Length: 253
Image 1 (cartoon, rainbow, N blue to C red):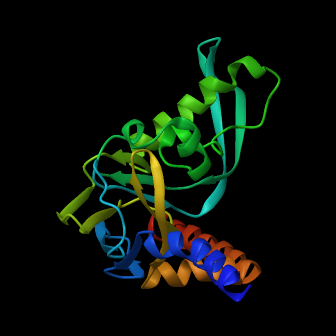
Image 2 (cartoon, rainbow, N blue to C red):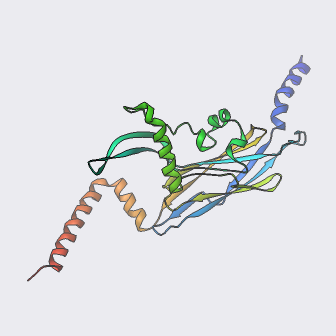
């Protein structure tokens, strides 16, 4: 009986022991920016480890690195010309969408896996199901708002895909450069690394980093967030003083 139980345990444990694993590390977990920030990169290094009994992957390995910024509520508006004036005629709310999204991989997203698997893992902009606005008065126009949302964020560099963003230094060592653009929002960024082969996820690792403001900009932002009343009073007093000073300077005697 003991031998039977031991054999069953080995059958259950053996596949897990043969599965690939990853070891990953970021060059930094905290990036401080100022008003003169012009962009930077955070380097991800990784190694693939496998047991000696792991079967060889005929097609090799694929890597998908998904970076998601702080979630936010975004409103996309449609403007129409009305009597010669451009006015907002329709809008959609995108709730809890990533303020930043990047896919870094060694091949195009469509070649990594089918859409069903990528939708479950949110791999690729076309597979991010969260980017769907609330229905408005005209549901048929909703896809157009999604396309506009993606087009605007791509133009800003906040949504991007790089099919050559992952480089294999050796068959088991890789690196990826995570872009941090000048208008990157501050907050916590989640990084998910998917090891794939033949359209199947073999292993997954997660890490994160933080983008923060530093210097006088950080002081102003923290004051506005943590002491809203005093910040508002100080702003009002500064505006009054500026107006008074301007009247004195440009006063006509």
